[in-house]
Length: 621
Ligand code: PLP
Image 1: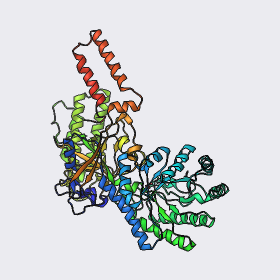
Image 2: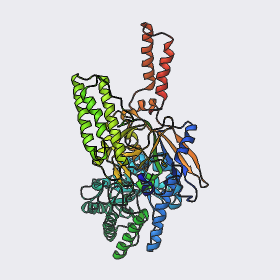
Image 3: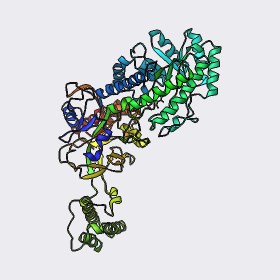
Image 4: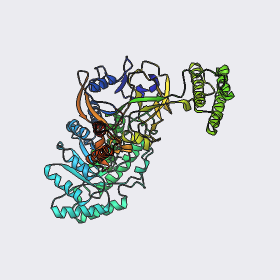
């Protein structure tokens, strides 16, 4: 199992057990043995909960919230920082009620708050009781309705901060303030000029679409001062972009944010909170490098860098240490969800046995069979070339009508058998061979029960890599390599980049599928962004979602089950009324009976088949 590099990326949460199962370790009870993931699935199967599913591990969410808050607290204590940390969770990163409710619950001891980037997200935030010092930070474009609700919520004791994104927004705030006669709690979003590296580099720097430049900020301060509201401006916000790979980019950006903070303070703005946005990344590949899908720092290092940079800058400028706020979402939720699905079947790119020669074989088929005679380690490339040449000639003859279907079928199988023998020679040889680079073109296709577009949209859209591994048989050496194909009818619906112990690979080591036993694969760290970004391509809907807790005394507890979309639900999303669909089908059945094309007794079977489908799961059952 060392081929998968689980020790490297698993964060000690995902581990391999002695029996070859992938196990979940409980970071809140590190002495307990891990819980086998296949056993959890077996247990859920018995309760009639099936794959594909998202499995949420509430204990991981609790662990991540503790980790970021404890790390900030430790850095604050170590640096003698004279302020506290009051993080907020950006709802956009995972808006699911099961996730947000738990984040609020686990965050209570830390006065952990919420960030809302839209009206619906503010509505979610305001449906939660937050502890005294917790913030609700409102980012994004805001109309009067949004601002009105944010201001009024202060009557219930919420610390709702309206972060001004543009000079125009100030006018709306002033108008709503005059209408309500109630003061807002304000923030201002500055656009840092430092640009970070990585996938989200366009979220930072001059061309970032968010935040205000120095000139605009000066205009905002003047407007607020004129309106008598400057004393309401308490928070300064900036955001670097998600998944910052290099911690030194964090330092530079925090340094620049501090310059704004100290300058604004000098201008007489009574700022108390410095909000540094998101950016804290997840090491999806476990490489610990400043490259895509990885990061070169830990949560604790990130926190130390932030606290030290702010302390130094504020001391130098003689400014009080502000309350620190960050809006880390990815790092808080990514590890807590995993996607689990089964393999439905495999298209193999080799064959165990080959048909024997027949007297009336075309001579090209005989030539193909003859390649077997000289297939040896030192002639692999030659055999590959010859076999491919004969097979391609035969295909050309088939297209022109000189070879029939059965002969062509025999030729394809002989070819795959030769490829199987080449793979076996490569596997058995100690050193490199001359066909090593070409073997990827012989990777199998494992057809899997999930939709890439619904469940892993970032893998499709932005080349995100999530660790993926078979969940069982990891004490057996994987004997095949495969790419994964999803259940949609779209050739883009495939995964062909995998993180392994020695780097990114175009195929995944897998086992030969057994006759009966299901073969499960797990995709890890998918808690951030994937669920709501996913779409209904081919009308594959939400999967089942199960939330579990790893119990302190060992084992697991089922906390919540959310059934995936039924076909009738996805039909409704695209404005089909399922009742109308049933009625239309029934009408066609009745007309067929009236016309004599269908027997009356078949009506029940046809209607039952239609109804079973419409009420069923959108995935392979
Ligand atoms: N805050 C704001 C304003 C954002 O735009 C985002 C997302 O990019 C976040 C927080 C979350 O950041 P992250 O994905 O780094 O957790």
